[in-house]
Image (cartoon, rainbow, N blue to C red):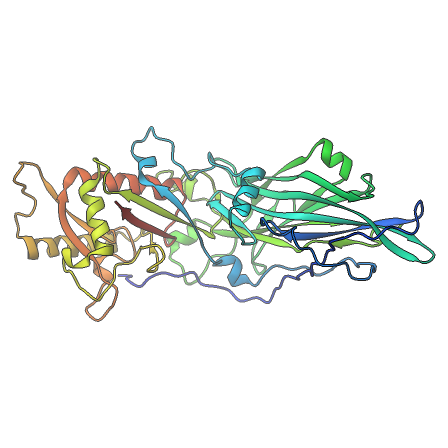
Length: 462
């Protein structure tokens, strides 16, 4: 029987992503020549409330060269990336008629992306949930006019830029949107010069993978005035193929054909007369994602979309004041915050799954023997502490032996041994409350496409 906590096997490969230095200027000197050759340089600034307040002075003008060899980040960062947590209240899964929060029905827009960055987010990619991600920056375009005596800056254009990626329902497909808006101008700017956005979609495992994207690379290049007239562009990409099976994974997981991709994007411009004269671009932003066929194999196990941003980790929150789940929610709250009021009540040990305090829990789906062993050990613990009649209540209703972490996780009670700091908790709770939490949990992990071995958090609040 498999009881060890699963972790992804990471295949090593040496790949890297280049970085771009950022420099801008605060005051524009008066141009000494006009009507001759001109060009522009594009740079980016973090999308924060104070980015534009103190822009350093411009270094001497020089031609920027087109970068080559912009690769992917190292494979471990793409297969097992740093996680961002998104919150979901269990009330959004209260009934089958309710609209779950974190699905392709909850996409992110360019404006929402900017609002979140200005609200304090600072990472390269923001994950709203497992189906919606974005990146945003201020784009600064510095214009130069050249004469025999040299090139001097004449003006600057600044705009908000956002790139969003939203997975589509029931498909290995996503829609990306780019938007430039809220332009401001200083000095003299040639609004007929082009600003472009390029994106690239590719597999991340090179050996033995047949993964590919329907649009491996494309983009849009328009003049500033054209972006002002139509500030958004959209494209849809479909993925296909599969990564080779992993010898370290069970046959059921290999059958899901989990396949890893990455989408990269950046803003660029150039100033002629050749196509890459005075070429410049912003830093490359990379968003990894994973696709599979789990939904088509078992739609009760995995729903919503066939691709997810696996850098997003769900956090299911239970309200102790929710009348449908109050006793079960209170039990989970106590497991995390008052472990001595639960059994076995191992003070000094901890219960996983608490955001910001412990490691997450992992979904257990395929190993039926381990799920049964978890459940049997929990029921035995309830009987040992509350007696064989723990199911009987003074009000005539029936108790269940509630357990946390759940039997459907790799951290269930059977995986806990005496010498571990990690432990588990049980308590008799009203049967309908326990079953309602179970049904909400099942809908949450299915709708959010959380597969066997994927992380998530569960906490309760007052």
